[in-house]
Length: 220
Length: 299
Image (tube, rainbow over all chains, first blue to last red):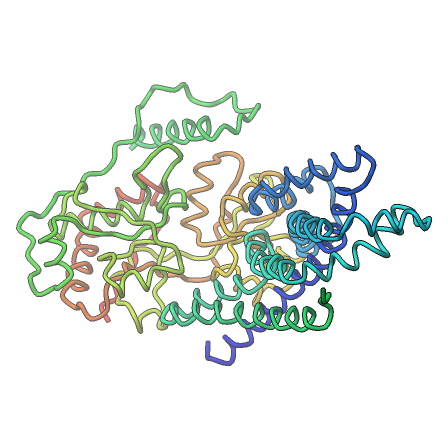
């Protein structure tokens, strides 16, 4: 297997990682925002539900969360498609979403607490509902405040996709395993190559967040 | 011979009981306690062994221990059972057999777990003196390590449920086949049997769990590993027995130590000639009647 074929193998691995990452990112941002909203809601049931969920899932190792999704859900006969590769993709993104959403929610909550209470009171005073207050006044500011720590959470998500290869997903780590299996003489360079691939992806993400921060940050 | 078979059977039953898969329908199991554990083969240690030309041998002799890299997760070949600290299996027996010829007793062998990603680096850096870990000889690997052997020619085969009608790789169209992510068997399925659907995990044990639950139709890898599982789950799984690749297992050695390679080759040859190889095989993988001993390749 020559250099070009190895490169091709790695590119298909990177594509797998990007797919997992993108779907899980969207899921985690949506679920995380909902959870953060529940955490600050005036209804005790919602508050308790959200904090219980966060405390349980955030404190479970991701490998276990993925175990539950990849082996527990099929056991309960919860399937999403005919092929096992598609099923495994959904199981893995579900696990990544469920896990990362906790960190997104906690990060957002810290952003929400930087917004002076007076703003929420003012919003209620002019007649906005809780939902409107949250979505029109509080969250837009909270998101802008937490862009740097949110960036760290999302980069962690990118690297966490590497666990999915152990559960029937093809991504960078499986590309690396494939390559090591056929080119035993290049183990160390291949390991460095994999690290480099993650580094490049993470650096690109970092640049995106730098850009967002510059564009969106609130000047006080 | 009969006694040996019986004791192997009782060990298998014991394993079955240990693994906790309480199968309701095994009433015909022979009574326990008839034969204790199958007797582990013993290899005569060659105390006069002297391979001073070999750097590796000399360093190991001076240190009083031979560092051997083996696998820890492949029943029948190299496996550490839950609760146990010592690995066991055919690879381990081969390591003991070779070590005996090199003048090391079994308790002078220090086992280290090696996985696919660290076999070459460990040998190159001198962390271990030899690798006996289902290590297929190929040209790429020969660039950085030397191989003695082969001591066994495995072939990719299929492990299926005992009542399955899959009789070979051509029956796999539309079926789910499980293997380890990135391994050669997995790559073979992806390249040559495109109609089969590959499921890839990081360990074979996950595949076996899926085969038990019926989530996959077959597990594929080298037949020796599958034999180990078939023996562990006797009556539940069977090995199809139509190998469709050739994987010569060699003993990996540090590159350039020709004296060591000669010595290990001689040791393997001697073990095959005087019956130790067969004993090792039957002790760990079951009957060796239809198994051919490979021809040592002294390149």
